[in-house]
Length: 409
Ligand code: ADP
Ligand code: MG
Image 1 (cartoon, rainbow, N blue to C red):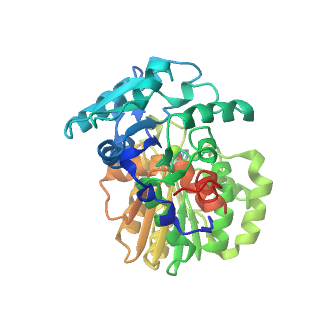
Image 2: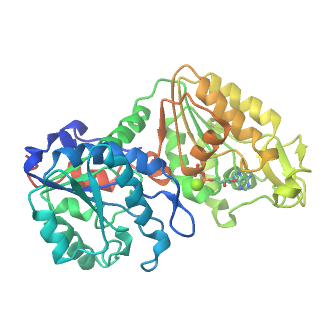
Image 3: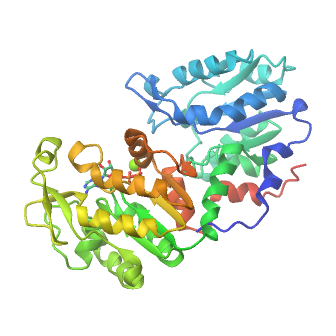
C-alpha cells in the first residue's frame, strides 16, 4: 500500500504562484474509448479532466495539454486527438476559449505559446505517444524529450493518476520544472489513502481476468485487510493451486507455485468461491445453457464463468459486516447476461454498506454503469494505477513531484 511521506496539499496546483504570468503544461488522462476512426465513444475520462483544463484556460498565461491515447506504434488517425480536440473545444466554447491541436512542437507552435495570452485559446499536443522519447527505454531519449516539453512551460501539473507508468510527460518532466498535482489526481490519492487507516472490518474484493496482474495487490491486501474475497477468472488459479479441480476454466499455469505461497500466508483471510456457474465452451451462446455446480470442484470439460449462488451469499454476508470495502474486478463474465449475476450482486452489496466503499478498474466501472449501481464513495478512473497504488509503497509519478529538488514557489 502506498505510503504518503509529505503533505499532499502543499503540492496542489493551487500553490502555483502568480498563475496569470505562467505558461503551464498539464498532463491529463485523455485515454478515452474510441472507435476505428478515432471517434470518441466514451468521453468519461475527458469529462473528468475538464475541471482543471477549464480553470487554467481562464487563469494561466498559456495552457498546453498533453495526454495519450491507446498504444500507437506509429502516427495513426485512429489514435489521434482530432476528435478529442473537437470535444474539448465544444466544452470550452461555453467560456469563450478555443483549442488548437498541434501535431508537433514546431517553431510556430513555440512562438504561439510565448505570445501574451488573450485568454482565448489553449494548446493541445496530439497523442503524446506519437512523440519519440515519450516512452523510450533509452533514458537519454526520454530526458531529451522531457526537456523539450519543459522548455514550453514554467510549471507542470500532473492530473493523470491513471497514467501511472513512468514516461517523459508523466514522470521525467517533473525533474525539470516546478511540478504540481492536479485535482483529479489528488482526489484519487485521497480516496485510496482511506485504506491505509481503514475503519474495520475492512473487506477487499478482487476479481477480473488475470491473477498475475493483481497478485502483488492481493498479497498486500492479505496483510492489510481483514478479509479478501476473490472471484472472477483469477480465483481459478488460486483454487487450482489449492488442489481443487478447475476443469477448463481460465488459469495461469505458471502462477500456481507462487499462488500457493499467497494461499498459505493468507490462511482464512482469503475467501474463494465454493460453487460456480459453468459453461461447456467459452462463448455467449454456450453460456445460455450454463449450469450451477454445487461444489468448489469444477467438472472436467467445463469452464467457470461466474460465481455460484452459495458464493454470492457468502461474499455478500462478509461484505455486509464491513465498515470499509475496496472492490476491483468483476466476479464473472459480466458482459454476458447469464454470467452477470455474481458481479451485479456483489457490486450492489458493496454499494449499500454503511461505511466507506470504493471501486475502480475499467471493467468494474463498465459493470456498475451497466447495472446502474451508484452509491460508492469513490469510483477510481485508474484500473492498473489503483492496483499498483494498493500493491506497492511507491507511486513514481506522485513521488517525483513530492520529492522534487526544485523550489516550487
Ligand atoms: P478491471 O478492468 O475492473 O480491473 P479486469 O480487466 O481484471 O477488471 O477483468 C475483467 C475481465 O475479466 C472481464 O472482461 C470479464 O469478462 C473477465 N472475467 C471475469 N470472470 C471471468 C471468468 N470466470 N472467466 C473468464 N473471464 C472472466
Ligand atoms: Mg480491465
